[in-house]
Length: 102
Image (cartoon, rainbow, N blue to C red; front, side, top):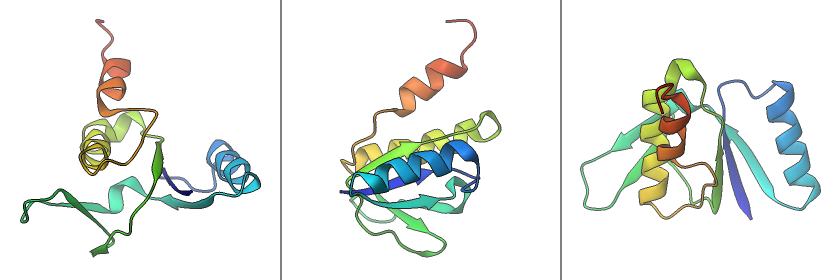
């Protein structure tokens, strides 16, 4: 399975542990900086670019979205959802976790 971990700090302990655990189970893992994405709205199909290049296909993503980039991080996760990429943490769940009045 090709897995992407969305994180701004690939060397953080928790991100490194997630990566190591996934690799131990035979998954192909890449840590992607959430702020390096661009959402392509020109075509009919939802699309993402990473560092100015077309993003390859991923089977699943693990979002690790910090509070400081909640709005943009939710947009990126929502775009992955539109592309039918599995995510255990949806954009709606990220929004609910940040809403202190719920």
